[in-house]
Image (cartoon, rainbow, N blue to C red; front, side, top):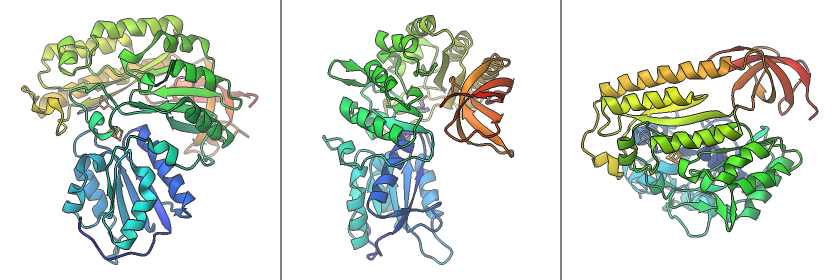
Amino acid sequence: MNRPEPKNPPRTFHVKSFGCQMNVYDGERMAEMLGAQGMTAAEDGANADMVVLNTCHIREKAVDKVYSDIGRLRREDGTRPMIAVAGCVAQAEGSEITRRTKMVDIVVGPQAYHRLPELVEKATRGEEALDTDMPAASKFGALPGRSRQARPTAFLTVQEGCDKFCTYCVVPYTRGAEISRPWDAVLDEAKALVDGGAREITLLGQNVNAWGDGERGLHDLIIALDRLDGLARIRYTTSHPNDMTDGLIAAHRDVEKLMPYLHLPVQSGSDPILKAMNRSHTRDSYLRLLDKVRAVRPDIALSGDFIVGFPGETDADFEATLSLVREVGYAYAFSFKYSPRPGTPAADMDGQIAAHVMDERLQRLQARIIADQLAFNQATVGKSCAVLIEKPGRKPGQLVGKSPWLQSVHVVAEGAKIGDMIEVEIVSAGPNSLAGELMRRKAA
Ligand code: 5AD
Ligand code: SF4
């Protein structure tokens, strides 16, 4: 690791997170920890003494993007902040980062960021500050308690890592093996979040529905959270079809605070591709699972992730994906071009798909998805629902919140404020958001 001269200890910091919601959560925990060390959060990186780039490695160009972000931190007077690269690119690249650029002082992986204060001290002394360990003991015990959040919605990581080894995916390598946080630790954190003003908690995990502590599964946790006074809404993401237990499905019927939304990625509608992806479920088993969920919660909003252009994907395979999308009618879906990740089995498979074929498939899939999103949203016009207000809108007097089905709802609501739950009549719908009118303010 190249060593610049010692620096002044940083007094202000800025954390910038990319990628998934778990990275957002990790970024908040890092900020809380640096705050507990007496450092102050800066609005942006331009003036901060230290910048943490909390990176994502899931798809291509992630690494290049990190280097260009680092370059942009150089200031006009030739100085720069102390720079920490955290997250999944830090894990995947390790000391390669400090070989490639002299601008990085700290490299810290997603399982080691509880040691960030020590790493800052080391970097201040001009010593090597790299930690990409995946320690057996979880980082969570070493982090300070949750501080009050400005927002009414909060993320709470309950499970991390992945043992499924889908052949395209870096997560098992960057986040490590599946671990579940203990029952008490999760409930304590949930209570702290609610005490700090959270009205909605989203339980996070790369395979959140694989969460377990002894005999207890995710549905038990959801039932326990349902009893927390002050908490109004519970969500969870991301789930794997094979970990969707009957207990969790039943929770969608029985637990009032559990919102009618399920993100259940399938990736492809073609069995040979699912097999090559090592998904260990079939198109049919996935569809039957959705039938079970819809049987207990007919209004559930389903969302999914799709990859087009996986190695060997034929036109017929792609048509099978389109037909699955048509059959399900997703409320929301994310679709991506396959991106070969170094070190994953699929990167070395025969039959890599040409870029223009991927582009064309992605366009067709996205057109289908947007039409379905619009149809789902339009079906709510004329109905009323509860909206949890999250932020001010762009127009004066306008507020933006979420429906139970995770749709963004824009509403002009005199006297309402962030964190309120209001009853709204939906008056119009687009593919990505709804507009509503205030009916009445619900008892908080
Ligand atoms: N290429 C493209 N998309 C990917 N995803 C994960 N790995 C890759 C990859 N190598 C997508 C999957 C996953 C989502 C988080 O990102 O759809 O569900
Ligand atoms: Fe990106 Fe996956 Fe890491 Fe999240 S866990 S930051 S999606 S690579």
